[in-house]
Each structure stands twice: as structure tokens, then as C-alpha cells.
Length: 124
Image 1: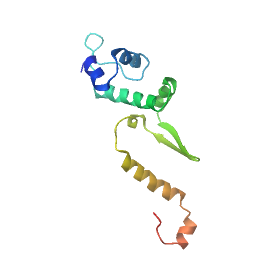
Image 2: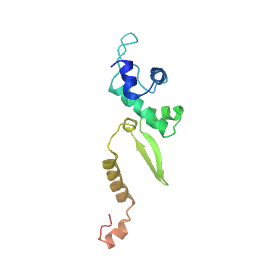
Image 3: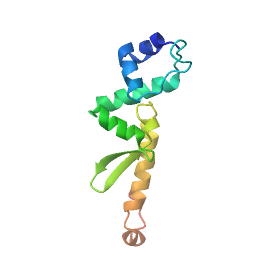
Image 4: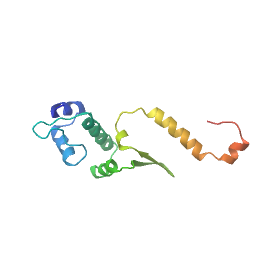
């Protein structure tokens, strides 16, 4: 797709696309300047960037989060930090199955096994 298509899909100005490329938030287009072509990877990168901006992250913090190879850390509660793969941010993935699995893992990790042995009733 051409830059005009990219701006229509994402709702951002061409100037903003060029800024995001220059700053490394999205990859450069394929085909060079004369035959620039953009794809779904560009759309996803713009959505990630926009979502993090909506959450209040400044560009410098977004750069750090997206460059984190091990994932972006988000403190959730005292003693709990959620590490999210940057590819997931702004992807539109369904959160409910992830939240369900997270609840299962946390419940199992936090469970007091000594009380569980005395109380066979599952309180989940």
C-alpha cells in the first residue's frame, strides 16, 4: 500500500508517518523512497505507538518499551509486574482469554498449599 492508504487506515497524517519512521517507531517502507510500499507491519506499529501514547507514555518511554527484547514491564499490583510482548500492544487481541489464564497462574502461584491440603474445597 502507498502512504496515502496507510494514513487513511491509521488516521494519522503523512508527516506523522515520516516522524515515526525517522524516530524508529515503525520500520522504513519497502522499495525505497521512489517506490515506497507499506504493509500490515506498519499499520500494527502505528497502532502500538498510538495505544501507548493514549496510555500517557511519552515517545522516549515508548522507544524503551518497544526496544525491550524481553517485553514491556507494567506494574499491576505490589509484587506483580506484567511483562507484555511489544507485538501484543495495540494489536486488538482478545484480552479475556489472556486474563483468564493470568488469573489461573496467579491463583496457583499465590495459593497457600498447606491450607489447601487441609481444605479440599476449591474456592475458585
